[in-house]
Amino acid sequence: MKHFALNGETRKVGNKAVIKAFRKQGLVPCNLYGNGIENILFTVNEKDLKGLLSTPYSHIVDLTLDGKNNYTVILHELQFHPVKDNCLHIDFLAVDDKKPIAINVPIKFEGHAIGVQKGGKFVPGARSLRISAQMENLPDDITIDITKLDLDKKIKAGDVKIEKVSVLTDKDAILCLVKTTRNVDASAVAEAE
Image (tube, rainbow, N blue to C red):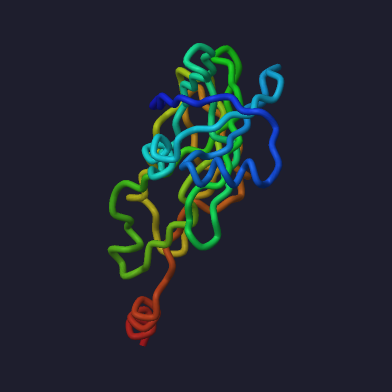
């Protein structure tokens, strides 16, 4: 999995006015916790987050606080402004490279489904899959081959098998399917007649 370097400055607990002042300066208030670490409050420059937030991929974040303290973290929770769509707050979760990490990974569909060739419509059901694995085994994305997907057939999360990776998404969650369209129904009726 790709790594992303990020620098931040620790901060003290503040009221709404202090948090607003940070945001006016182009800083995003953040929180770091997990893996036996006591909560750490800090800020990062909003511009430094662009490469992390404007991509469908998940990253392992190499976080440096105050230029000296290094942490390996993942994005845990994000809050965005409902109108401006800028990031208001981020929670980071500290991880250990010796323990499995649970993270969402984007799905890529590959191939041309048989059902689509017969006139059906391909419908993606999910954009990402929640998985768990050791840090060195985490994939950047999960490629699903849809070439054998026929009319009215679906691929569920339980159908995905990846070596050294556990799928945490509910096994009955539909990742994609091929729907029968009206054109296919009409041609089937014409053939029957």
